[in-house]
Length: 83
Image (cartoon, rainbow, N blue to C red; front, side):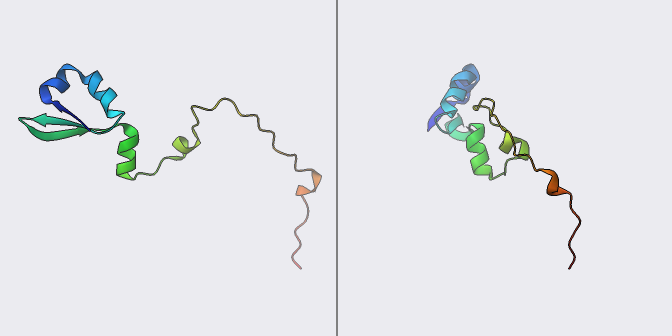
């Protein structure tokens, strides 16, 4: 947990953002906590918002994946059997 005064926060936002990667950053105003800065990951954990399908499918740290689905063959189109 890190604490910044409003003045410190205004003077060095970059340092506050770096500190937020390690945990919540409390910003004080006249000695009392007034705001909290969180990383987006921590915010999403607290918010409980489910990820969108795009976020779930995104794999930014993974390179290209080779995928060759098996061929279905000619028997996929056959008459329905209703008996």
